[in-house]
Length: 171
Image (cartoon, rainbow, N blue to C red; front, side):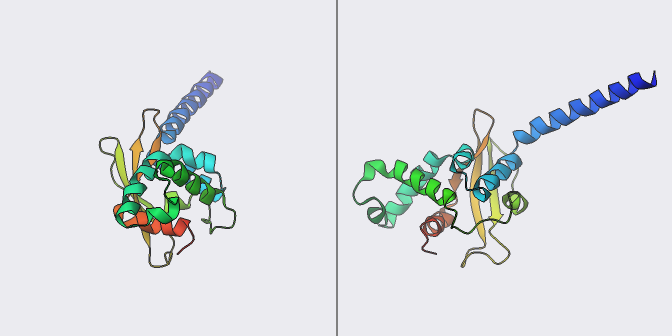
């Protein structure tokens, strides 16, 4: 009889653990962890699973146009901006020479998230204890996609230009 209860308890613990893991896998926190893991391991493929590169490129293009900086990046080829921006971001993530985060949990541990509302959540990330240059925080939006994965879908207007200059190595 005692062995029967032990099996029931172990099955209940296993079931609860599985439910908690499934819940974690579909949370904004898990997406931040995997984003950090992609940055830490220089893995652009994993990074692109948690960042909507097309949405970021679409947001980046008008910001650069309004500042007159798009021409130098594209040299007149406006139709290829999204693919060029996606390639530039992927190259930055894959670059083993770029400054790296201290561990895959860095982004998750340094993040302050709002409450998910309407399938979106605002996130602020501390870049490091002292910041990078004059920048201490980076703000962006995570959006819940139909495949139940939270992805970065937008960067705050104030941080967009800074992030581009940082990726280009100009900061």
